[in-house]
Amino acid sequence: QVQLEESGGGLVQPGGSLRLSCAASGSLFSINAMGWYRQAPGKQRELVADITTGGRINYADSAKGRFTISRDNAKNTVYLQMNSLKPEDTAVYYCNVDGLSRWGRPYEYWGQGTQVTVSS
Image (cartoon, rainbow, N blue to C red; front, side, top):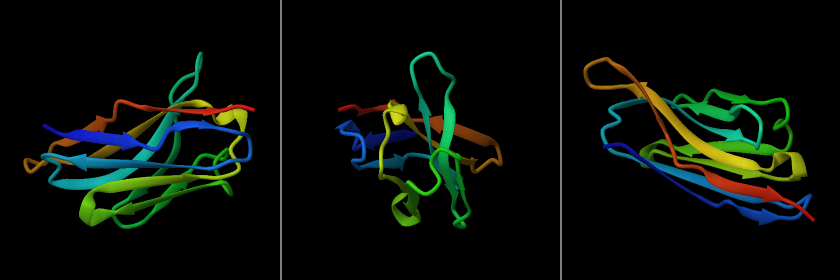
């Protein structure tokens, strides 16, 4: 069974920083990408950033210039460094991994979420 273990969320003041980590384990076979999504109260889940195994990166416009995504492919771990945090960054952040099984079947898995709260 695939598991995604997230850590690093918490309470921070505006302008502060947090670093999220997500380690994937289990029958992943061939990972295409890992990334971070977030969901604020009353809003739909949205992409924050993702990164492919080959290193291609996508950021949400709201994250550009403030957040940095990185990964350790050998450890199947993805990180999100969040700087200059704003109250509107407050949300539950979810780790995501997608790829192909050994039978060529696409898969997608989600972490349980970690709370990020930005407040003075």
